[in-house]
Length: 46
Image 1 (cartoon, rainbow, N blue to C red):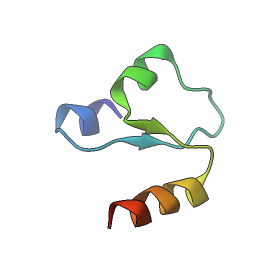
Image 2: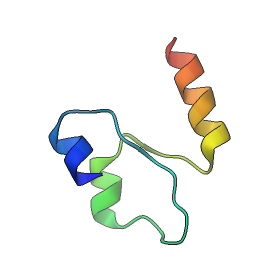
Image 3: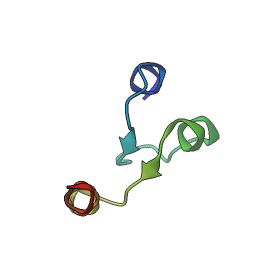
């Protein structure tokens, strides 16, 4: 997440074993509940 954010990429986190930290909330444009939500977000951008 840090590298993607530093590169200026749109970052979306899908938490698995660990809950997102405050830092992750700051670095991400979105924290999705699952990959289905990510697919919906990408489809909405198209």
